[in-house]
Amino acid sequence: MTGFGGRAAKEPKKPLVVIPVYNERRSVRNVLSELFRHYDGEVLAVDDGSTDGTAQELARFPGVQVLRHATNLGYGRALRDGFEYAIRLGHDVVVTMDCDEQHEPAQVPVFLERLAQTDADIISGSRYLKEPTAAELQHVPPERRHINSLITNLLNTLCGWQLTDAFCGFKAYRVDALRRLRLDEDGYGFPLQLWLQAWQAGLRIEELAVPLIYKPNFERSFGRGLDDTRTRLSYYLRVIGRELEQISRMNALSVPACNCKEQA
Image 1 (cartoon, rainbow, N blue to C red):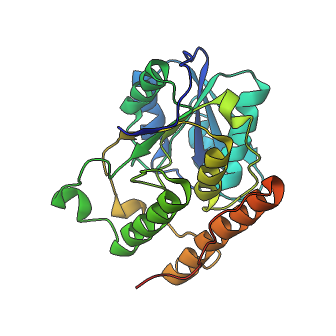
Image 2 (cartoon, rainbow, N blue to C red):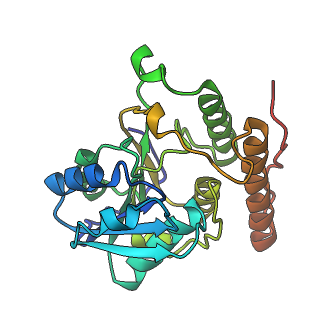
């Protein structure tokens, strides 16, 4: 585990697990059943316009609160709506996890315990904090790992951090810290805006090792042309560049320029 920054620890008291879901009919029942074997707190599923029967699967779990988008608004929007729900209902901590069986529900208590023991504002799962085995890597598309590495290194250069995984969605947040951010990115570039705003706000970040689980049978389209590797990378770099410009304008700071070109 790695950490950056510092502040007095504050024990979380009222956690909420937020799960963005979009056409997850094949996996949502397994994920929720396993989650409730290890966690007895509140759960919010944000159904981002599913059309495949996900809503019917969610209805099997009356203990799960459901926020439903009439149409698909994006991964970032689903998370932001989950954060707003947590703030509105007075939760102290939010844990986010995906619903494609690539995050282990048994680790939710580990995230909560770690947050209770540390002064971190965000505990971020990392699939690369420990060196993955060849067996773990065999199903991971090389272009996805390449983009993750490229963006992670860029964020580290900008923020002076030592992150190892910029894109893992398995995280625990202190809600007080989320209140200090002004997140508005709806798409898959949401984590990049989050990292830059967390840096600017002086939040403390720690990484927690999580298994590298990649299930090819759950491979999905990014949509909006982002399945093309260069198009997706260009989008991520635009999100970073836009956020740096916003930080510079708001704070009149000299921020390192973002050279939005992929290096060979």
